[in-house]
Length: 484
Image (tube, rainbow, N blue to C red):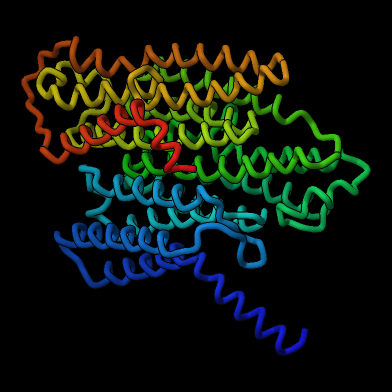
């Protein structure tokens, strides 16, 4: 390479770092938090750290606005689409919301908590832009390793056990995924998404490629907590800090699904005879919905119920990948955003429960009459999780199943019809455990004389999430325009 060409290459590379402005802001902010933690100790330290983290998130939002909107950069390793900035804004808002949770024991005890939360956010930023399988793997491990630590941040024996279980299963799935990636590289000679299809097309034997894809898919299924790769999920959700769980249950899954959709789109462009991955994903989606919903029916612990609920919702989100159309992709992202809003509100309430040493759903007996505003807000959020009108959850499920029905009408594949019918059935099943909470809040009585307190901030927070869920139903078109 000539000197002039080298200088031009370096100049172009430096210019492309403008795309990484949000990520660099997060990294700089995280380092700032580490220094801040060394300087501030005592009772005011937690408040200072939380405020500083919110400032970092605000700066990241400004950086997202200042960065270029679309294009590939850094030799095509990363790329931004029209929807990438909107997803980044959504991730930042969710992160800011969970930092406002009322049960701040973790924030008070250690300064690493906010740093780890920002690392999860950073990892998801890279996941939704990854155009290289190795970068995807590294970003996924960044999210995974920080998640392992966050699960154990309850500083209780149960939390450590759940964190170790999550770590062991996660390490196994990461190993399988890495082996799958090595096979893909051996077959194609590249890890860039754009080059893999044409390189693989030269292969005469699809056996090894199918094996590589299966191993890679297994790693993704574990991270999404799809059945039967969900074993770690209930214990991790129950034992981990509620604010961290609210974040982990949404952000990584959405980011992985964005990448997974792009990857599966490439599979359709190759002439190599692959296994019927749409059929396989449909079985996993149906299994996840049934196992998640039926297991949630038996739960009395609120966090454990939400863990199984998230497995069922992951199955529903997977429909967007199975459909494989632009409409299906839009429906999946719409569903993800609405699900994130609902989760933030419900886990905020669960965090308030933990603050008042209430663990089980049966402990909520009569509290809806004591705090009617909170009870009504929770009812709205839970009705939305079921997918009933007039809530955003109904609009989200309507879009997802409409996209599935459209593809079925075009292809007439029977497994798509089964997926559609059983998906609707599972929405009906979820009604019985989600509305168990309003049932105890308003219809059950208790002999306990203990009085609890709900602050004005908590009421406002829950009211905002409930109103937002209602507003999405009436302004679904506006949200779709914002996303796309």
